[in-house]
Length: 254
Image 1: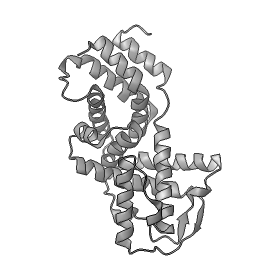
Image 2: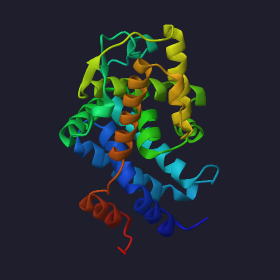
Image 3: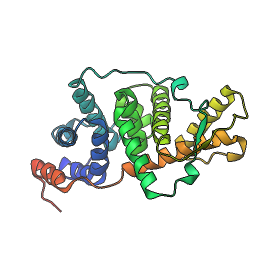
Image 4: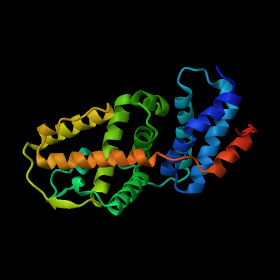
């Protein structure tokens, strides 16, 4: 196993930006996000000799971050931990349908991204944390289950429902068109939606020819929300934050 003087700076270089993006979506302020990132890397630095290699260093790093996040979140007690039911987030009864194919204007996309980010921050923490780890950080379901110490099926269910909540928030910013009746019974539409999410989990294409026009518009807006989430995770850590962490580790800058 590499010494901490090599391992932790390498994690900072490769994952510092994503960890900062994660923190910015999990914390209530930029200052709290920076505190979480600093404390994550400092705990990794101090406890590197306790890392036994049973998981990857990346999973270990995000385990530290998720525990800190939950501790920070407890300091802000009082937020209702509502449950997202499929009945609540299912979109098949609206008189209007989203029209993601009409999203060509950069301002519309920007407004959609802003609404999506607001919705993500507003999610209950038990949905927000696995969703961010999956959609922004890019961890697998087994990795997220290990990080959060919950069952893999629970992680998947929370990610799926969180995605649908983000899709619903994004829908407000999208062009719309008159709704048409679903071609299938409601349960079939829900089954198709579940199959679509399973395909997304595996980065597989979903056959468009099996869905009706209403389902197609819903699935297209779900794809758009997924794409916007990926873009949220892009970008470097702020330079001054990185330099502060490096200085605290007393590691010479490259």
